[in-house]
Image (cartoon, rainbow, N blue to C red; front, side, top):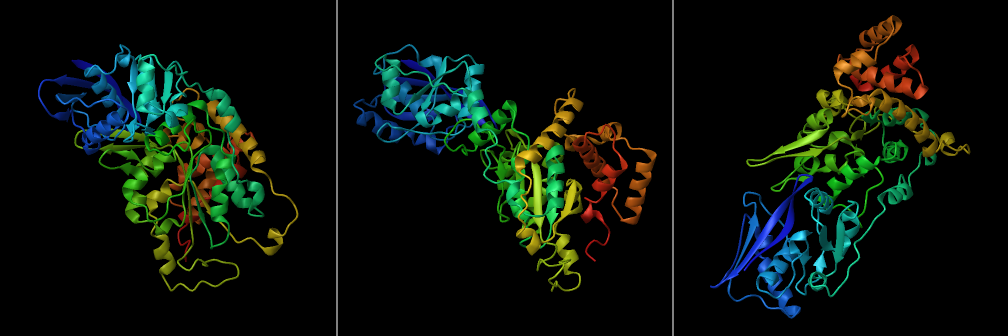
Length: 511
């Protein structure tokens, strides 16, 4: 007897339906075909133990499980449940006509209990797209799958519950989640707030500009100046995630197995990998390509603390994703694309000892050491960072000041207004939502400056030794400053402020 059940395989951030055919016929042996990995091949032992524990029998005749399409690699133990139900139906121990109506996924323990799986959101989206009535999966994954509407999400705790559901002995109410209500109640819940930061008003201003235009930032200053503290508070002033952004971000975290407790992600991600991270862990990849840190930062912030301590090869692989806002991972048989639209926030000391240019402490680094340290960060990478901010230590008077600092909510209100201006400006462009995303040709059209502004920019580039690559960046930042000020045109004072944020482009900055 031939039985068909349906599962799903995830490649990148998309899912593909897998047809699982089971035939029980004369002969002996158990075979799984269709490019299964070792975890699937070992499923025989788990399934046999679970069936016996629940009072069923494993067929002693020949059992063949075919997973189609056969040219797609299937990985992981999430196919245990559909294979087990297929075997029971093919051996006439499960009597139902409804198996083909559902996508079924779940890893089984030896007693038939189900364990959670990864990539549920893209699987549920694909199931709805292909017209399945519903999806059957472990209880821990139910909230995540229920984000997708018009799909019956049947949460089961064990293989036995799934059998009882199909045979009509157990009625399971589909899991329902009101995503909009969930979204509104959990949006932008950050514990860190800019009100905690005393002083550093110039750095707060730079981060406000960065948040308003989606610009990348590098902060350079001595240890203990507050670089990390400020960076961790950046997400609290970013605009709230839209529903579309939340779905995109949740999909990536679902595929990576990073969704704690399931459900919709409603706050912007903040990722801060250690400087010992590898190229693959940062960008993504592996035998079955998985998203890296830059994709997990999609629609959020990637914070690289102590930037020169990262391996040069790791930093250089970020150049293309920073420009294209996506990562393409190519293998012999497949090419997978992960989104990577993130804000890069980096921090670094000005020298190995940390005290170059410090107002009180003396730098002990030898001649040429400072420049060598700064050269660890390449020019092409700095080219993609819009704002260079010098952080100075906070004085005792500033730390003990009784005046309250501005809260994140106050700053975010101004950021939201600036972003609204940009959304209106880029209404006709699908992939452009902020000033930082503008390509060079658009910069010429949108960031037009007066003759006085052109002279100021020319003088700045000549006198300060600014590199040619700083030109577009200055105009983009100036446009964002004008948006924050509610100005239609870029004025002289907007340009002047943007120019001061190009510290590391100055010739001889370190000496």
